[in-house]
Image (cartoon, rainbow, N blue to C red; front, side, top):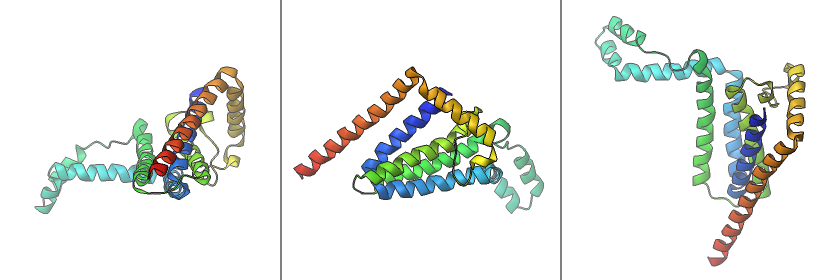
Length: 211
């Protein structure tokens, strides 16, 4: 339970800092990309899993000579090759496919962060915090069965869908946050993020004045 809260606070702090440094434009675009991925994971999980399994099997079929068999008209051999290929995302591994979709969206956002030039700003910080929340809300249910992991998520995860479970989860979250040792740890994480933010801002200011 506490691990979920700590992950949420850490993720929001990290992307809040990154959003501030990279600016509102990057943070907003990255948030849209991540939101699209999370919505797909929530609304069409079976389709995503089937698509990724199909892509994997198609690649493996090509590598094992299945296309050559099809080209020569030997359909039975191609079927035999295909039957020997195990789907990577099935049963307990299905959530790995959904995590991969979200991970790809994060990677795209980070690549954009490295390529885009923008000025630091408060709106970037705000969008970055929202980014961290959406990322946590998308990932936590895939790696944990704890009801606390089911964070509220507008549109795709309305509170009325599971009102009792959502209420219990929020009560547990506030009870966990209220514990002094947990408050201290979370405050430390946020404090480190704020210090990092200040240091990077000062460093940028020094470099700008030198230029």
